[in-house]
Length: 313
Image (cartoon, rainbow, N blue to C red; front, side, top):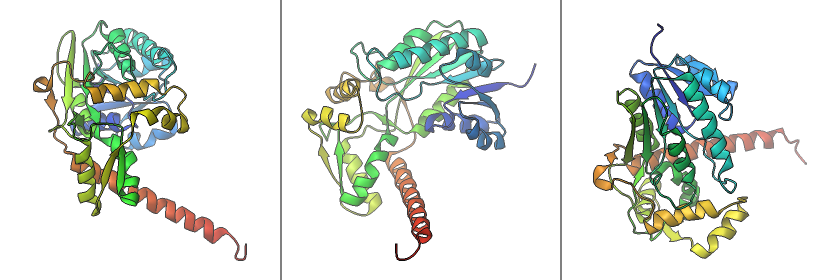
């Protein structure tokens, strides 16, 4: 028998990397499941095994999951799915086949708040995941986190440059469950280290519920300038999303409607959710710092390009 190993898919993303970092901090052996070999070295340096697998390829996934104590699985984000969610269905089918073949001792699946909802929306992809993986022959936990605070990354530049952010979440004073990806990854890792039987659901949100106006005021404190917030009128969503390149904006619009109207929420209610530790301010500070770093890099690259252009051109 080799040492106990935990396989982590989506390890290059925010949640998957947090899962891996938590397991490594607990001195557990981690197998990084990656599609791109070029992204392996940073994890190999940390002592991880590296396994290459495509999320649509059951055989490579089965190899990556074999011989493990536990596996963390998640769907890659598909923001513009085709009607009927064929992209998610194909990945879920590959995951199911791989897990049946590999037989890890336990599985933690990243799901979402509202996965129990019957009405079709963007999160239905995770409803499909829960339905198809819910009767696997090993213990399975579905972790259902709230709205990710990191989604506000898109708002850093307009908050900093224009002093206003635009919200699809509305009314602007409605408090919604949100959570930091660091909490999601930490809890997923902690769940992997537990023993349980059958299928269970864990619903997770941050320390407190957050209204869009609170996001604006928090940006204002962090950036040191007034930041306002405006609701994007519902009638403009489809045109706006299509102008950004979306072919099928309906599921995204339905998801936003679900959060705004309240029919996307936790199955067990607020009193039964696990509460994370990371506050909104910490997440927004991190997003603002990352944005500054990206801007500096862009400025340096621009400067290098300008220096490379002969004078007088």
